[in-house]
Length: 532
Image 1 (tube, helix red, strand yellow):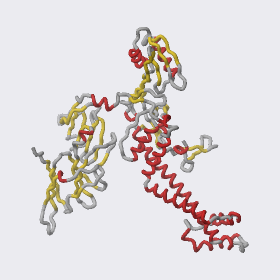
Image 2: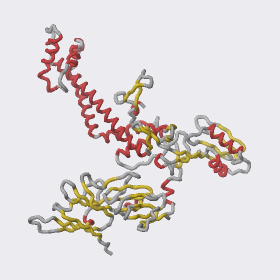
Image 3: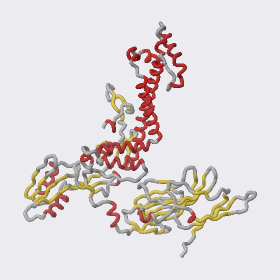
Image 4: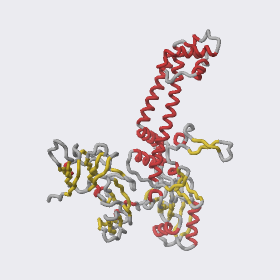
């Protein structure tokens, strides 16, 4: 816990409420404790309900964020159970949790209970349901030890499966929990998603690790300076020169003079505190000074300094290695059972719902206003394609920016939208985005072709490189670009034509290809029909 949560050198302290003690303002945590443990609370006009998540999965999510990869987190509970997270909405929706119930002869055995319940409260809810006639049972026995074991005896003639469904319907064997990820950030309450918390903590991790490395580097530089002073002081026998000095000022001056030939070997200029330290070295220690051992220790310090500087230059790689180290410790044979996922994910996942949902909603787009959605009713709106309410769509704007979102009812996206399609892997693979842009400092026009295959939901990305201005974005497979050049002496060809199909498809972060080095007066873009 200390390795993850605490570092006295990076912790900010403030006065306690009565001013008698100091208390940490916030711990420099390397992992999002709020997601690991979960919490809940209320205040005037607001409340928070955050569910716990699996430690190993949180580590994987942090690694994915540092690597720019997509990730998704759903809760995991110490009590186990079965989780339906299809409406979790990244920490702002709700979840349904069922007890894990097995059949044993003419009995039902509750082996895991829903999060937020206890064996006592669960048994009480079953007894209340039996008293009200909602379920029929002959008895209930609690054999719980370190493992949950609640035995339920069905009523006469009651089928086990029917009773199980009734338990889920009328007792706390199935509970629904609404979540609200409300946090204090920069001393203000703010609602965040699980994804945003992971993104925040990925930056936090880099900052804490950088602070630790810089502090260690500072300590090592001070230690190296001290060791270097001691080595020169003893090896060059500067200590013998002060034997004749009778005053403090004389001794200090002699030491300063003795170090002048070795100024280039020092980490920093020698100071009075350094001289005081050297004069305080006992004679016995000087006589036992091992030159070879001291040199090896200094060499080890220098090696560690080089290692730290390397880590500071490659901070993300260092953070990934740190997370791998934590992951390795938590998956060691003695710890593995503590951190494996305990809650089973039910079959009612978002992906399954989306796959079977009927696409009977017409996605409409009004190019004159820039509005998109199945609720757009304007006369100038045109149907793009049919969707279901569970679909996600890719939207590429004319300026080269793009994002993936759930199908909106009505949302303003952009006029002259370049592309809109369902964000399905196979469908995305069919589309290539062509972006024409101008580099601001040179005025050169570039072409860039890319496929969008990876994304994080509701995160906006840019195809356009920095210091460039977007000219056109389109998804047509074959486009002809005509560049007309500015008149200039010696110009033989007034214009050139380029076909988009002549250029390779690259990654979304790649730079484009320059079309021409000549000053461009105007540009025309024409869509070519596919050859039959």
